[in-house]
Length: 326
Image (tube, rainbow, N blue to C red):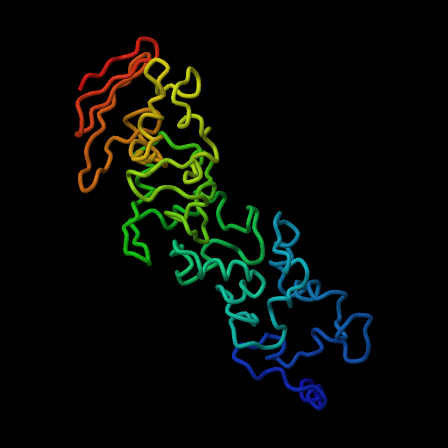
């Protein structure tokens, strides 16, 4: 008899699932196997699984030779993820390729994304893991499909979004950055993942480290991701001549605002993504309760002043300390 009927006299037919590999569907068993003998496992006609696969999948052959970062299972052998005969999943994958296949190896990620409190909505989008990663490999770290995490994030964060857990509105970050070109360092580096965990987190806004969730909070250096880059002494030193320019003489005005039982969190004055009107990433407006009031900062050669709605204009000067009576 001709193959595949001849082969099926001994070997169980491999065409009983939803998705059938082309050579199997065509009954071309000998396209991959030598029916008499071979130096290779499974009587393959080539010395390795991958060599066999790319003899047809030539685009993947070019990819494997040119791409910098190859996913280890791909580099090992294609059959780590694909069944060469038939499967019930697209591309003969051994599980659904959008997520289920990934977490067969990335078990820690599966546990993480299912247990964190602040989840990433991208993982619930139609392509799930593939929204961000190429499962074969990429020229970019972490097999990302874009050059930088910022470029990748802005493919979704170019509109107002809503969190799945609470329905909280998330601003259109692409629009915000366009309107506020004085960017925070991580934004300049194109590295949103410097601060945010793209798989989710137990911290506010999927931050990698804690940050206060409220406007007022007792100061605790361990509750601020900011100190991963910024010196905590900017806040902790009551008097200083060099740790910060925000001082009245040698009185550290950061300490005055933050390092107390009812301290203001950094967000009260600073925008973490970008600003336009004021230096030092100072916000144009700050939100206090339901009120969104202007800071009205004015910079001088040796200091500056602000006049938010809750108090009269307050001044500071590094050379000639100001006395604010009101």
